[in-house]
Structure formats: structure tokens, C-alpha cells
Image (cartoon, rainbow, N blue to C red; front, side, top):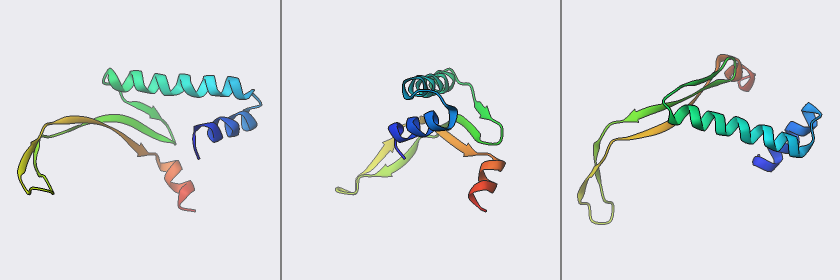
Length: 91
């Protein structure tokens, strides 16, 4: 499912117009982005949580030259599914 299909489904289920559903989805995504960039965790009980995890620096290898390289530490967004969502998927 891509974004436009999601907007269509949201409009169908909520009774909102597609334009309003698109605005709502964009507002939700922007809010999650802002929270994650400021270091906060976003929890949606029953659905899951979004957070930022720190990745440590490590050694890697260039597959073409087999030369060892240093990969710097970085941050990565992570989604962890909630209990209810896991149960729905595993039915």
C-alpha cells in the first residue's frame, strides 16, 4: 500500500474527504518526525512505538577492494510493533 492508497482508505473509513485525509496523514507524519528529531519517543498504545536508536561506530569492508573501512556512529529511526498489532497479524 502506498501513500495515496492509504489516504483513500483513511477517507473511506473516516468519512473525511481525500484532501482532509491527506492533510491529517501529513500532520501525523510531520509530528512523528518532529518528535523523533527532538529525541522523543512516540508511543501509540496497541499499535507500536517509534524511537531513535544509536548505532555504534564499527569496522566494515569494501566488497570491491576488500579494504577495511571505518563506519561512523549514526542514529536510526526504529518502529516496534505493539502487542495488539502483533496479535492481529498472527491470527
